[in-house]
Length: 278
Ligand SMILES: [Zn+2]
Image 1 (cartoon, protein in one colour):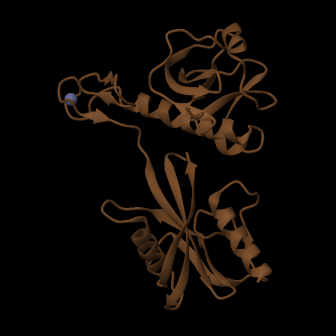
Image 2 (tube, protein in one colour):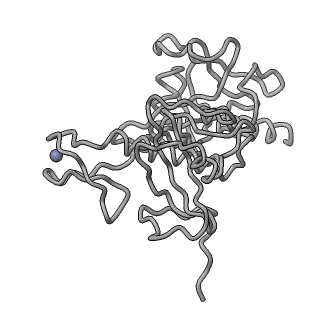
Image 3 (cartoon, helix red, strand yellow):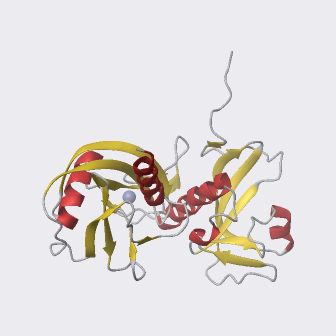
């Protein structure tokens, strides 16, 4: 007995010979998605009706019985009446979760294709691989894959308190859990310990995996963790990007980013729920 594919979207680099159902097309101008005035993905026949042209397109895979493609619009593209282009951050909530995640995938595939047309070593035009999602230099044989940057994000607990910080590029008054990129050669858990120490001089223990989220701004995979305070006093003076940080009691939390769209909010909500329960 065969089982059904366990996720709503089936990725593939090999387009079907013929599209039986109307495809779903994610068109991007720079990194902004083409949507209708009511912030939905326009049907392909409407895109065609307005003679919107793509520089190049990429096959993504199948959503149910619909083939999905991304497309790069021309640099001088101007949306016709009834359409606009928007950053994916502005489209949380107006696109359903699966479609938003797919748009996040689409923008990264489009961007990878756009920026890997030539070999970075010898300058030859690259070719699309037939075996996987890569472009290959026919001279050097170097494969070029879409970029994906793992980053860790962590809720550090000390009893009923949580460690929150604000980076100097945050809106005024907003705090969040700590985050940072994983460096080559380190595990995600090591990245948690290093980043928390670098940003706040706090030492943590019992680093535990919480969950993850694709974060296409521009190409991160956020790996969420919880950790316990072990030792140290908060000191942000060693990190030029940290404006301030502190432990906050669950009943006296500062202002944080609104909504419930990102793993930083899921971590914070899980902390609050767990403390209010117990
Ligand atoms: Zn080359």
